[in-house]
Image (cartoon, rainbow, N blue to C red; front, side, top):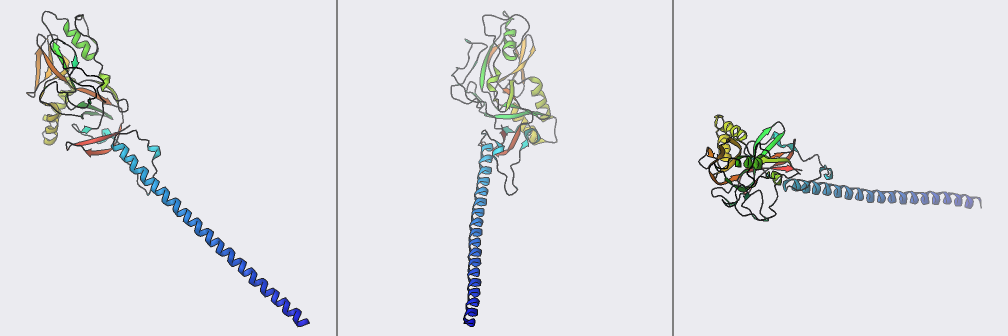
Length: 315
């Protein structure tokens, strides 16, 4: 009876140890399974985050290069790769193209004639202000190019002529010079010919407020600086060639300055300045300048459809 009690006690202990071992093993296996599930979930989450990161990066860069409204705060930085944003003024050169967009014409205005002096036109509703008008033969340059870089401010000039103006002066009506000044520059001194237009030109139609602050007609000082930089910098022939191409667009266009109160400046298709008598008349292209925001940035450059370098602006 004592042995049986002892045997029973030993058996109970052994069974207890075995049961405890089984329970411990089950706990270990359970923990291992939970750990495996957690690891799988962790790996899955990491994979999802990386995919989201890479997708977001691609979408952001695509947004930049397509000129969209891009919010860098939505960019997920991953694997140490970041989109580099550079100040445009630090990288552009005179003559480079920039993907600036001045919008589209909202109405159709015929090319002005002698019957409509001191007016502008030569475009159709829905056409791009970035493109040249067909109001004059000889130029088909489209887009915007770098006119100057001063500190961190870049100025762009239309690569062609987006519209034309008909000028009609007369020696018998000297007040018309003030009409011209008021239209082009927004200010004049003296009387105007009240029978003809004199309302200042709204240059703001070329201002895309995402990128630019103001616009105006190119002036002689800027063109002189442009020209002199090209032709007096013999150490950089390619620069001279590019700049020459910027000025000589094979058509006649107005410059905002007056030569004096009896004549005005035009850049003509013979590659030089002309001084036109106020008694003369005719149709001329205009080349607006837009001033970009200070410190505006770029995500880099692409080769545009014409094979030229074109910088992409960031809003």
